[in-house]
Length: 79
Image 1: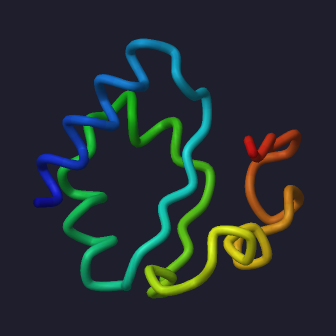
Image 2: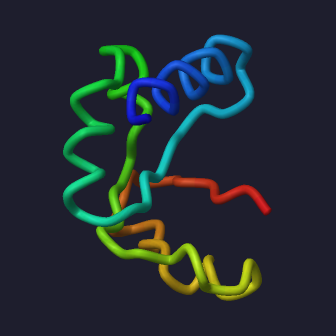
């Protein structure tokens, strides 16, 4: 499953759908996902959040993301 997600993310990254990526998932899966990412995609990862947010309402997700200063300077979080 991690490899499938990594492939989809790679396709989107190559299509310039995003410049920076914040990974959010449980700690164990983050490790699997990180291992499956390509080198270019790894360079786009600006932060990781080791939390299970699957049942959080979409409107509450942003509050769990790191502040811009905690990730890369100038991090833009798309709505």
